[in-house]
Structure formats: C-alpha cells, structure tokens
Image (cartoon, rainbow, N blue to C red):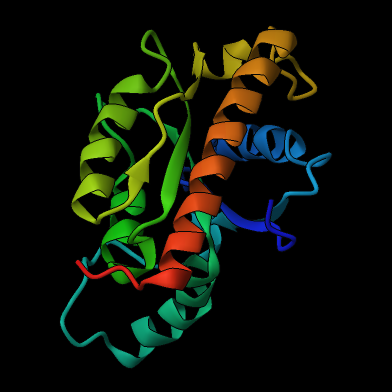
Length: 195
C-alpha cells in the first residue's frame, strides 16, 4: 500500500434550510476516523455560493473567486464520497451545478455515494449521478450506503438506528473506494489520463 493516504473529499450535496445532509456527512466522516489510509476533506456546498447559474465559458470575477475556493480541493482529491438526498426522483440542483463547474478535476477518480430519502432511500438520485459522473470519466463505486426514510433512519444523536448494518455498508464502500483510488492514482502517476 502507498504510504501517502488517499485524499478523500466528502461532498455534502444539499443546501436547503433544515437539511439533514450534515448529519449524514458527519456520520460517514466518523466512519473514516480510524482509517490511516484516508485523509478527509469535507466540502459542504452550503459554504460554496455557486448560485443557480450554470457554468459559463468565461466566469464572472465573482464566480472565479468562488471557484478558486473549491476547485483546488476537488482537484487535489484522489476520491470522492457524495452525500445526497433524493428530491423528486433526482439529486439537488446545487450538486449538479457544482459537478458541472468542474470537468477535468473528476477524471479517472472514483466516486462513492451515501444517500438518504423516503421509500427509495435516495437510490434514484444515485442512479442519475452515476450517469453524470460516467460522462465526466469518473469511476462510480458499485456499493452504496442508503438510508431509507431519511432522518427517520437516525436517532436523536445522529446515529443510524441500524448502526451495525450501516457501519458494515460504510466499510464496504470505503474499502472499494480506497482500492480504486489507489489503483487510479498510481495509473495517473504513470500515465496521465487523456479524455
């Protein structure tokens, strides 16, 4: 195994008032705490004022300043965990905007998903995110951590009600993500990825 830890960016993909995303992000981040093979950077999109305007060929000076706060962090990451709710069978617009403002930063890097929502547990949002990230030449990790019922799947302390099952799912996700991140980092070091 490489001596340099995998740089993992955990992205909180919801910015709505009263959102539950930070609780889920805190939980998945806590699952990495004992892992010396991961160096975690939490990117909360609520702290990145991308607005609703999509990417433009020449961003305004204001947008350039915003992008300068997030782009280096996405570029530096070896892997990503996207924490997303499901809104109307899809994922939040702010998450799509954040993805679209970046292109080469995602290439040849693995992306894992932690989702939450009603009946489907956010899995329909992840289905669509897989298509988006594939278009950007990122590698989607097969196993996903899903919380059916959203906030109801957690207790008042922010712990999943099925803590053992959730921890096992997180371990599987993080193990797969780490394998792919290491393999792809070594590949990028030997031969830059060209899309």
